[in-house]
Amino acid sequence: MKFLDEAKIFVKSGDGGSGAVAFRREKSIEFGGPEGGDGGRGGDIVFECAGNLNTLIDFRYRQHLKAGKGNHGMGKNRTGAGGDDLVIKIPVGTQIFDEDRETLLSDFTEIGQTFIICQGGDGGKGNTRFKTSTNQAPRKFGPGFPGEERWLWLRMKLIADAGLIGLPNAGKSTFLTTTTHAHPKIGAYPFTTLHPNLGVVMRGHDELVLADIPGLIDGASEGAGLGTRFLGHVERCSVLIHLIDATEIDVVGSYHTVRRELESYGADLSTKIEIIALNKCDSLTDEEIEIQKTDLEEDTGASVLVISGVAGTGVKEMLNDVFAAVEKQRLVSEEDSEERRVYQP
Image 1 (spheres, rainbow, N blue to C red):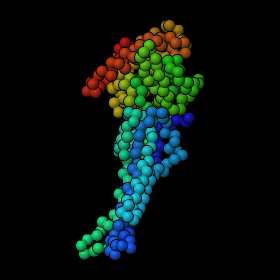
Image 2 (cartoon, rainbow, N blue to C red):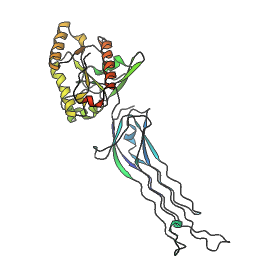
Image 3 (cartoon, one colour):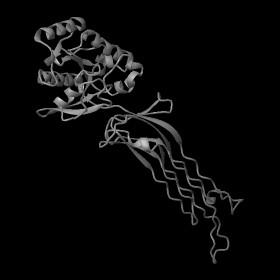
Image 4 (cartoon, rainbow, N blue to C red):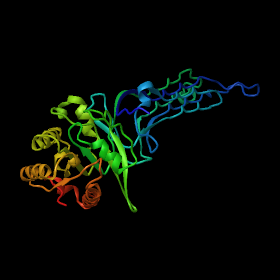
């Protein structure tokens, strides 16, 4: 299944049915009077959060969505049937924005959550409603009210406990494969990962969800390389795992390139707990690793882990730190997240 995290759709709730003009006609009743029923109400447009979806790809091929119209009223004071509601199922983590792409209308974070975005039009009144003492046989009726319509933007943001960040080819997908049962595409070249991936890390009876987003580049916070959409997928993560390619000449520069994009993007990304790790340590000697590790620790003032996603070196110890950081963050109130916190193992 292809991954799609943004879609533009048009929705319209159902129009209400018109009222009826009818009169009672029976042989034994000379002046039967009006008996036109009201029109039925149009159907609503309802969004529902479903647990079995993980992409918005369905909306690429189905962009115009309309609820059912209400039926017209009938004789014998019968009200027309209401139009069917249209229930649109969306994945967990989906946000609904107005056409301006900035006004947030609803944020879906729990399975089963629903939201009525457009209400159906009311049905028109039948001629019975217009009967008065001076007008015993009205031929007036009310037309149905039109339903609401609008353009919407759907934007999906993954919900995970920890998110993998770093420059392209930092080994994020390899790390995800090593620690979970996920199987993202892996290649020895930048931008192998073109869309986010999720995996579940198990440790005894504990588990956490790990998100791998495509590598960030300079200018990602301004949209370079679809960076704004990729960064959105780690907004909900409580912990960020910052992987840095130890084979890079300037590991400190690589670190700050990603940090600048997090700070420029906003959404409190730069204040999240961060675990820093030098990856691909199997490609360097112990002396080279120590030099890279020392330079990075002196610059950041934080402890730096040394791992190898391919060989599995240091991965188990790192996961213990990740579990501890996630659990710690779950207990921390939102007021404590104003300042940046770097996790110290």
